[in-house]
View 1 (cartoon, rainbow, N blue to C red):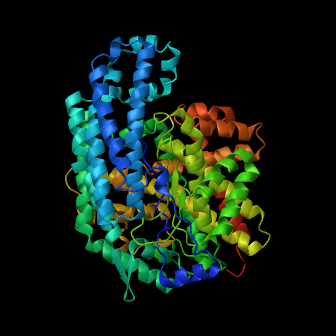
View 2: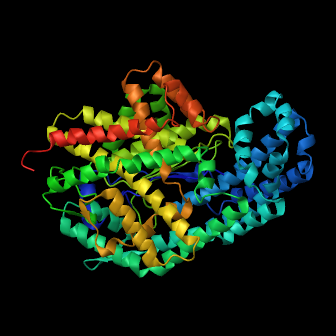
View 3: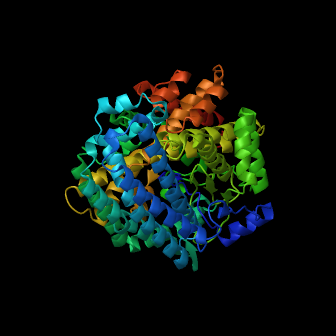
Length: 618
C-alpha cells in the first residue's frame, strides 16, 4: 500500500513552549484546524472496521482459491478482471491501515491507539498474506506471453503497473519465503519502527527545569535568543546520548535485517532497492549526489559564511544553523492569513489547481494543532482513492510554517488529481512525489517575495528560502551519504554509538562547511531522523524533487507554452509514467548530468542576491 509522504527533518516540529504558545495566541492563530477522520471510519471501535477486515479476509481467500496457479492461462480480459479484484481487496486493507496510521500520528503516546494500530497491522498482514502469490505469479509469466495478453484493452490499462512490478522480477524469492518475510514483518521491521516512534514520542527534554517534548525542544533551535538555542541544543544532545544504546541497537538491527534481505534478493548495494522502488536508475541518483556534493562549497559553505557575518559571529555553532537573522522580527502569521496566502498563490497559477486545494480547507482534511504525542514535522497521507488525502502539520505561525502548508497542500493536490488512476497506479515514486509539493512551495514563496516591498523583509524571506532549500538539498544528500556509510560499516559488524557519531560528524562537517564548529553534544543528532528507520535511503528524493522543480519552475518563468496544462497532466499521471516521460514535454531530462546543475544554480543565484543585498554594517 502507498506510504505516507513524510517531509525532511527541519525543525518545523510540534508543541511550542509556553512563551511561544502565548505569542501565537496573541497573533490569533490559536484556533488551528483538526482533521475529521470519519470519512474513513467513525472511530477505532466502529463495527465498520471489523466488517471491512472480515470482508477483505473472505475475499482474499476466495480470490486465491479461484486464480492461484492459473494466471498464465487466463485471457487478457480475465487477467484484467483478476487485477481489478486484487486492487479492490488491497484498497480495503489500505483504508484500514491509513486510518490506523493517522490515529497513531495524532497521538503515539496513547496505549489504546497503539494497541489498535498494532492490531490492524497484524490483521492486515495476515489477510494480505493470502495475496502474496499474485504479484509473484504475475512476474513468472514470460514476457512474450504477457505481451500477447496486453492486446486486450482492459489489461492494457494496467500496463504501467505491470511494467513497474516486473522491475522486481529478478529479486523475488520463492513464494513460501516471500510469505514468511511478509508475515514476520509485524515482529521485525514494523515492530522496531514502532519502538522508535514511541520512544521518540515519550522523550522529555529538561531545559531550565522545564520538561519538554523532543519536538517542543527542537523548536527552540529557531529561537531569537542564542542562549536559549544553546540550552535547548545541549539538552537535546544529552537526552539523545542517554538513549544512545537503544537508538544504536534499533539502527544496527534494521541495517542487518536489510542486509540479509538484500543479500537474499541479490541487490548489489544497500540503496538499490530504494532506487528500484523510485523507478529511477542508479546512475541518475549518483549523478544527483555527485552534483550536490561538488556544490557544497558554492551553496552551504558560502551561505553559512555569509550568515555568520550577518549574525556578527566568527564561527557558527550547530545551534545557530536555523537561527533567525537579526533583521527577522519573527512576526507571527495567523492561520487564516497563512491559508489566504497559500490559496492566493495557487490560484494565481491555476484556478483548477486552487479549486482542488480548497477542498482541504473545507473538508476538513488538515490537522495543524499543537498537542503532546502528535507526530512531529509534517506529512501528506494519500489514504485511498475512494476517500481523500489528509495533511498533518504543526503550525507555529512562522513564515516557514506557511511554506510547509504550501508544500503539504501540493502533495495533497497531487494525490487527489492522481486518484482516478486507481489504488495500484495513483501513487508516485518518491522522487516524483516531491514535485507538486516543492512546486507549490515555490509558487507561494514567489508570491510572498514579489508582494514584499520592504527591502529588509525581502532579505529575510529570501534567506529563509535559501535555508529551506539547503535543508532540502544539501542536508538530505548529507543524510543519504551518512546512510551509505552506516550500511556499509554494518556489513563489517555492529556499528557502535561512537562510530555512528563519528560518521555523522564527518558528514555534517563536510556538508555544512568551515563556518561551523561542532560541539561534542551534536554527535547523537543522527538518532532523531525517522527516515533512517522507516524508509532507508528515502532522503535523496527531497533533493531530487527540489532540483527537478527548480528546473521546472525556470521553464515556467521563461513562458513555456501551455505550461499549466502540461503541469496538471503531469500530476494526473500519478504512477503511470516515469520521470523521462513526464519531463519530456517541458524539454527536460533528469538523466542528463547537466540537469542537476540547473536546479543547483537557482539556489546559488539566490545566495548571490543575498550577498548583494547584505547590509553594509554587517
